[in-house]
Image 1 (cartoon, helix red, strand yellow):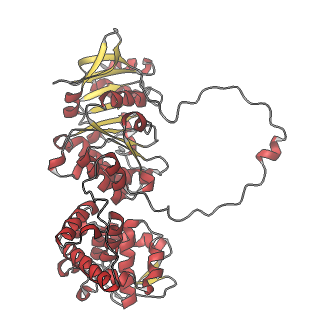
Image 2 (cartoon, one colour):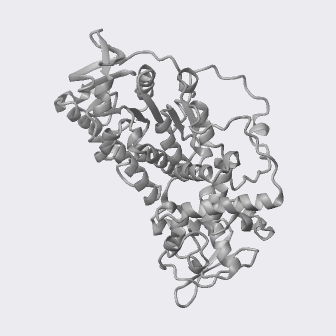
Length: 509
């Protein structure tokens, strides 16, 4: 069955339809200067296709959050979540087929790129059983796939560009149909733009952009000036999902409106009395911003509210109070289960959602029943496990200061800090870059070194090298210090397992 989405009308007055199934197979590129109507076009496409296909929108300005009220999209505020939690959310979005808006408003350019890359990575890496058809709309795509390096770090640019390239080049077989919109083709990476087979070109003024638009639509160069004369909401269309020949069309109306409407002219207010005193009054005292946002809401809870939970616990399954001996036995069993999971060779690099699912299954096999920790408790247990701590050691009074200091850091960095703290407390050699990378869940040694530098910038540790080039770390105020350790040491703990003191030089699981 062919699903035709009505986008508006052609210049001749006929209905302009878009073949949704063809779009899912061929992808779409939208170009137009600011004010040409790109966001309106995307909103029309999303509204018309919402009943037929799952959608996700990478939204740098928060323009599309209003879709939630009319069409049930789940809005994920990226500012409230870590990169790792967004990657897991991307996986769950596909598993449970929830349409979403990733709102990147409030983040700087680098963090927008990092969080968008993490979320797109989760969509892309989900298992084959969940490769359902999905529209992935990226507004202002030049921000996430820039043609040239800007003010952001090379690492952030590579992560974001890699995620966008995967979406446009390899996403089709995984059911992902990229729809990217940009103000200028010249700002967009060519290998990302080149994968689109459908084009909607709006008003543009620069010669280079008009020439590229004309080339993509198969028009002669002398016809390129036509793009300068297009009105707001008018586009030239070409592609198997739209038209076999360049076709002018006007986008139809939408049901929803952007949260941030275009400013309108309005009368100036009456003259302000004593304007100098009001405008130049002394500023209020500065407020010290907290170093870390309050604990972020759990994405699993949000997704389960949008779709029925995969794991249901009966309301009548109330656990009886446990005495001290039973509590100790329960902690030991939980440690044993976590130790078995973390002893697996790839455990340090698996998504937390996958680890938690395996943990729940093993807890059921052990007969723990309703005593299975929830995802939030499991995150804390995993943080301690990656530091080489069991549940009994993590509850030690000596670790209260360490836990408080770790809370300053993003959640995915806390395990690394605790791992270093344990090495310092015991006087063991400083963990190597490979051990730090594994505890953070990455293969990148460069990222491990950047992570260590970030923790030092927060005033929690001081890193030094001795005369032999070995690294040792001192915890600020606690005065605990690691013994010197080789930064290039191999990650022996990957073979020796959870909590192994024989791998003290690496101290990870």
